[in-house]
Length: 312
Image (cartoon, rainbow, N blue to C red; front, side, top):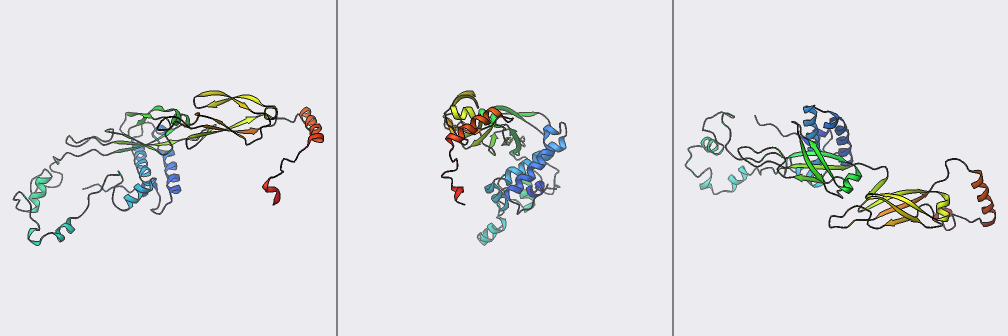
């Protein structure tokens, strides 16, 4: 009996009309339950995780999803053979229909020879002698933003045990897929092994945010630092650096650190964009209040002058 291909929509538990956000949400819920790191030694859940990851890798890509829905590829993203037998017969020269080279007496003998059996053999009595490529494997790997930006050595677990080592290239973006040639299922009858495809999910970071090739950072500064100016130690992907905050800097001012952003594929790096955020003392300070009251009485100004919201 030929095993029926699993349906990626059913694996994720979504309808064929599901939006990309619905597909992503369904996958993340399943991944939290089935991830091998959360279920060590559970081969069944590891296999199920591999299946839902392959389904998500297929359906999360609009072009792959279109090709699957059109019947061009299967869930493993392998091209489906064109079923043109009837069409080829209908368009052929009538005198040449059902003729095969080799002098076979009937269709049964033709297919038996082609697939390594004898005419009249039952299905499965003799294995095919054809060399067949192994199936591809599909994995999902979560990495931190720092690992994605700096590069890292990681491994992914196999359902049957063991792990595959891989290198995360510096600067990889969320949702990118790495191809590991020959790391898929072994081939049949000396055929080549399939490939492994690892879809990378970059987790949010508490400090940094990526915007294309740039890294965005919000930097808290005190009232005195904003008014008088200061030199502040700032974290970057490559380590801490000193940033000079100019005097009279308002909240929202953006400082640019050249070349401190994400690595670019062709070389170089983006920038780090540091947004200043003025932070008041954690507790009320009478001395600060008194000084500001005296200053406002003599030097007060309208901070909303020219603000568009003032006209509404």
